[in-house]
Amino acid sequence: QQQVKQSPQSLIVQKGGIPIINCAYENTAFDYFPWYQQFPGKGPALLIAIRPDVSEKKEGRFTISFNKSAKQFSLHIMDSQPGDSATYFCAASVTQGGSEKLVFGKGTKLTVNP
Amino acid sequence: ETGVTQTPRHLVMGMTNKKSLKCEQHLGHNAMYWYKQSAKKPLELMFVYNFKEQTENNSVPSRFSPECPNSSHLFLHLHTLQPEDSALYLCASSPLRGANTDTQYFGPGTRLTVL
Image (cartoon, rainbow over all chains, first blue to last red; front, top):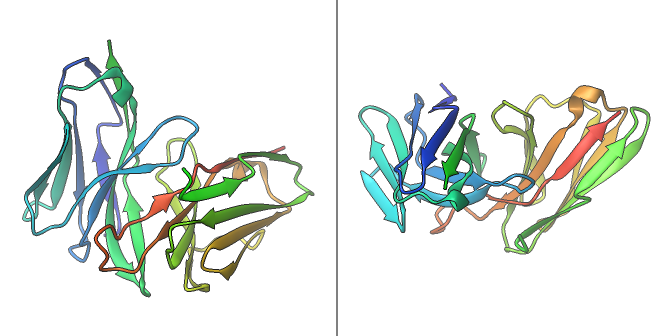
């Protein structure tokens, strides 16, 4: 119930393509869903996040679609660029003991070819 | 990366050594976290500190010993590690829940290799 399932494990697209990464969860107590981007040798960096009362959130070329009834959410990257090549992690958050507990997916390695 | 800093960035140690990892956050957050990131595995939460008090120990072996002297600093003391402990160790911090950006911010990590 604490798992977040992420797919695909890896994804290769051409420049300008629209990669889509999907995540699913079971625990309905999760109340915040951030996406992180990680480049090699760096820590994960917050990219975009959504709360379950919203079905879609867009920031620049990145869009989260959220389906509360299906307990699924996805990340879309519009007009993808080679600089977007990184590993993307979805996560789900719940408060425990006054602090945030994040449960991460296994990550998707995205390669955007020129 | 100036929000959460970690030192050292790389560490190679033998199984009998004792070393410490340091994390410092400059974001005014009240919660701090240690994670382990291994290849092909999800990020594994190790410890959580809230206002300097440990609120979670995720069944971590005792050869890993955390210390949180204040809300801005977090240490991970290492002793008699095993080769399978080689990984990227990430520190994170977060504000109180309810803030507009109430999620975790990560440092760059310490790449640990145990020989």
